[in-house]
Image (cartoon, rainbow, N blue to C red; front, side, top):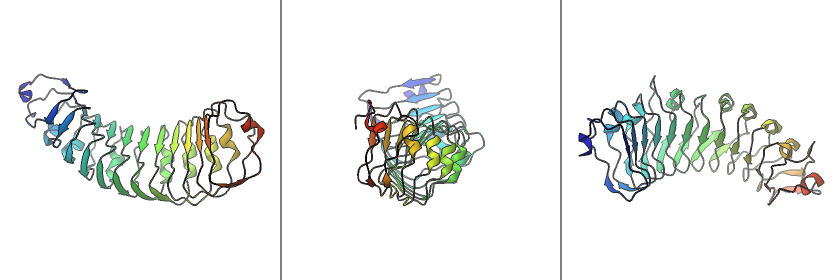
Length: 296
């Protein structure tokens, strides 16, 4: 039996057609570091025993047919670095707990049926770099997140309230996706402090405010999507001069005025620009109309 392989350190069985449940008799596998079985036909729940495996660093059983609730013991592990349970049908809340020596760097729970709120305990996960919770049924106000975070994906949930201004302290953040929620208030100018930010997708919310011109300072930005968010006011000219920008979507808002002429040439990398369904008037600036890379 699998549980009798006491010396086993790595078990990879991903990309197969294996079915059945995950064995629960694993407690003697104290040397196991990697348990990787994504893209199979596994059913049942996650055994509690994973939380007591003292060497476990990676648990990836994404893209299966697993269900039930998430065992709290997994989030108490002091050795686990990567937890990927994405694209299953897990229910209930995320049982995060405050621990002093968490090694978790990646939590990927996207595309499940999770409910409840995101606990303030997430802020204690000081090593966390990726928190991927999009496409669930989570709600509530977003708490403070760890400063080391590089990816924060909370899109297609039911989070509400203002986007916390403290997001500006996660200075290594590269991807911020908060789309398709019910965030309101203003877009925090503190986002402009995220110098490494490459993807900013906050579409499908209810800001009903203007676009902060300070976002035009995000020189690493490749994709900016604030469509369908009740935006008003004018478009900051700096958006069109972002040096690495490839996609710009401000569609389905109530933006007014003219399309601004960039202070310098339009972004040479710009491939896609969506400004449809606004209240813009005037003509298209020649610097934008003459862009050779635009496809949309």
